[in-house]
Image (tube, rainbow, N blue to C red; front, side, top):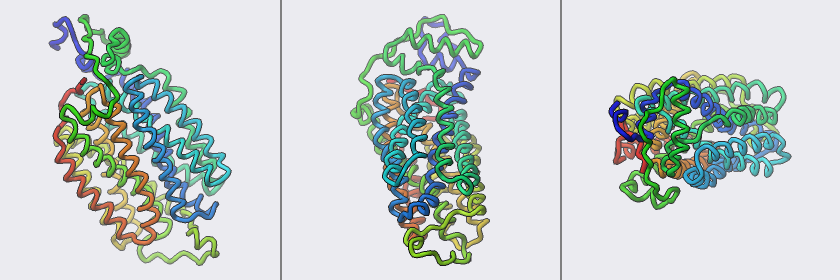
Length: 461
């Protein structure tokens, strides 16, 4: 490479020269544990709702609030964690977030009542506002040649966590109860906490702060693990600019990108968590077309619509969740050949089509297929938009940019339980058309993004 003959080189040059090796595999494995923990906690919201509704005789809005409060916590923490990460580093914030999630996740299983459950789940959500730092750290050590593909493969961990949670729920809830499920779901967070200490700080962040000696040390560690030698030249000191300010997101030509990205992130969470929650609600109450109506319940059960998931319902949920594995080859084929913008647009469009198909009166098999389709393309949207966002914003405001987008996503996630768990009870067709319409609008919005980041080096400032 040409920079090896020069007197200076940048972090981007060094990361590209480092290539993909044992160092990146270690990062992928540890950050993957973080992703599995996140997936288990998120999927828990869908399988927890039916049993808590029955145990505490809750109404629809109370069940929806259990989900919304998690995302209220995530919304509250996204900007805060993101700003701290741009000021103090990715690594310490990732450690703090992992500790927070593990602690309050375990405490949730001891909730004595509904209000305590809301409070503790909200605190878990607050911790997940900082969980995104593990993804940023992973992306900043990936060579540009492999970045998109490896970050897509990282979504395997999310799919594993999602399907694992449903399987655990199908075994634990009917036997020893939901409190044990909550405790078991927190175990990956504890394992993550035990392994996250070996993560390095981001060399890009250190260089952007002017901490060149520390950045070089981190790069040297990576080169050594990959069996290569650090370049003999001098690592260039990045220009020190203000970091972690909202004004940056709306300057230097990023205003249009920020507005569109905020809308797309809002919609991404709205539809993704919408199908997760709607799936269990459809199976719990609407069942499938032509299915016999549930037997008459006691008056209190009628008030809270108590109707636990059956073994067949759990099976349908597991099969539909496998759609998230399909998202991986879809994105691997399209994200570099078609580009990030077109990949987003196509995935949004296909998600909308499958949302509308769910309303068709059909058998359990076809209902599972349609939900499978939504899960596949909605998951593809999530990992594509993560990649695009980490590539479009420079190092000096990458955490804040992703944190701001994440905050908008949490607003969408706060709202979606009242569509998927409240409106859906009154109008299945109305809720599905709402999701489908949002998907179609976002398909157009993705094409209006001003930058295509395919093949583009990650900007520094």
